Image 1 (cartoon, one colour):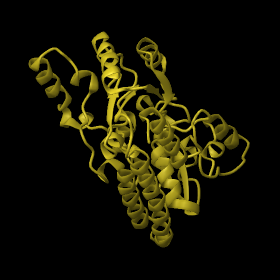
Image 2 (image 1 turned 90 degrees about the vertical axis):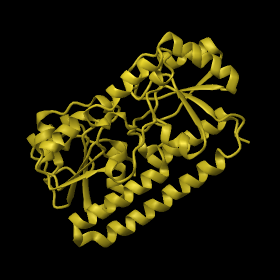
Image 3 (image 1 turned 30 degrees about the vertical axis):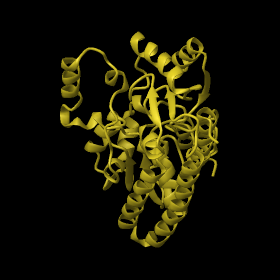
Image 4 (image 1 turned 180 degrees about the horizontal axis):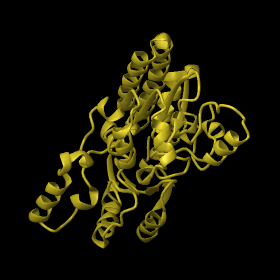
Length: 328
């Protein structure tokens, strides 16, 4: 299924409404279609949630997404229209802590079924890379730790859990159970679709295990710390230029440290991504004599993505890692 072709812009939604063209079919990038179909209407917060809803829901769901293709999801701000339409949906599927604006809107929404993907698996604190390598001493580290774990500590947890196929499969199972409960008439199909998705994700897991089992180095550099779960799952070490925030700027000390580490650990490649600037990654690569390539955190699928869907992009990521790490 080509999700890019199936997305319809907010402008198109407005135009269709004005022209009386009727209800839009799944899958719109604006949530205007939510609640207006005879299907099980699901609002997804961003692409990885959208993919789960489509794969598990199949023909029985109408999926709309709050995050436009190519939009950086961390910085999403919802329109009043999106927030209002969310309340018309049968279910909303999101990942708490990734998009603060979405969390706030869902908390205030009357939508009956709220599915928080973060509650369906265990999130971990992989740390803020920039601060982990700070040389300001224990006092600074303690202050930062206190700051990180304030407000319940939710923002200290790494939200990029979908990049681990095993954890993503755990979430998928929970989503399927929620769909079955909310729309019992189609529970059997949801279960069947979830089993098919589980097989795809198990195949990905096996491919990653086999492909990354024997490599020249286990260290890879990324633009921001999105790949902590993937690295942990397959015995790799992620070193991020930035921390969990893709827009933050690294310190000169961090850049120097990465240059030294590249030599020590045989790092060949600095990975950047499609939705944020590649300037810092390319500067580091040039200064350290390294190559650059794309490792996609899959926060959105665009024409620049090296794959049509989640599985396709994950397979492209595996190939990129195998090349960069010197898989044998």
